Image 1 (cartoon, rainbow, N blue to C red):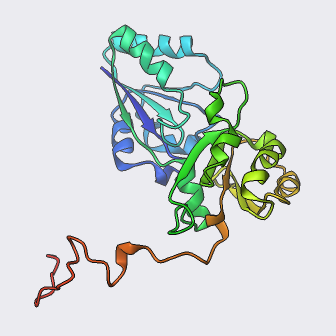
Image 2 (image 1 turned 60 degrees about the vertical axis):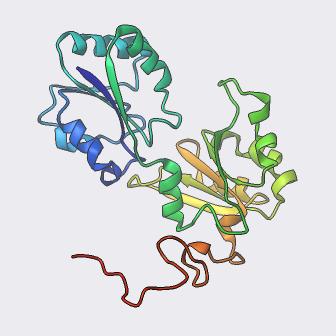
Image 3 (image 1 turned 90 degrees about the horizontal axis):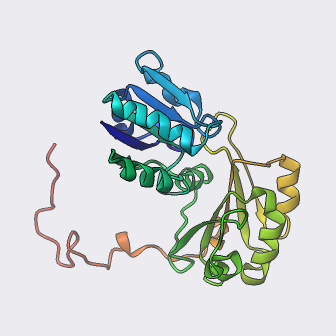
Length: 262
């Protein structure tokens, strides 16, 4: 018996990986958080799974009890996590329980909200000469924060920021970022990315608070901040530069071009 932590992606069922879907189909017990994962993701197993349990309203002990029962019955469990399980998936404490119980587990990665939101915006989050770093974080709330990871400290890098779980404190976020990024720095707030009702708003640190309030975003939103979001003044990548040789594109080209077998 194995518990599979499966990255369900940001919402669109088509954004679950093939491996994730194949694994989901073979598990008789399925657990998912209905507040974060649309039921449509389970369409392929609605008629085949023995149990489908919405974990949104139950706690860790109750989740563990379901897994222990499945373990006794020798039934694999699919534990669907929104986005990618490694990012704010709260799988650490679940895995700790499984290791205490001696239950096998595997983690299957998924498409993150950061990747899906960048795709929705049609943006690359790393541009030559602008920034080569993306920092994924969340705004400080109930979760304890090391001093070195508080937003003002992270902002000193000038990197692209992807801020989770902070939409209710957008005004505080803006206050803390302006000294480091400037009022004119671009920002995007992406709401329920890849869901049927997905939406987003863009602006600058100077005007985004009012724009978010006008939209009425109060939850399930990702905040992206950085000059890469509105920048045409960047260098072409060396990846395809004509004068940049590398092992796959030597400076002295062979007389016969390499062909790909079909």
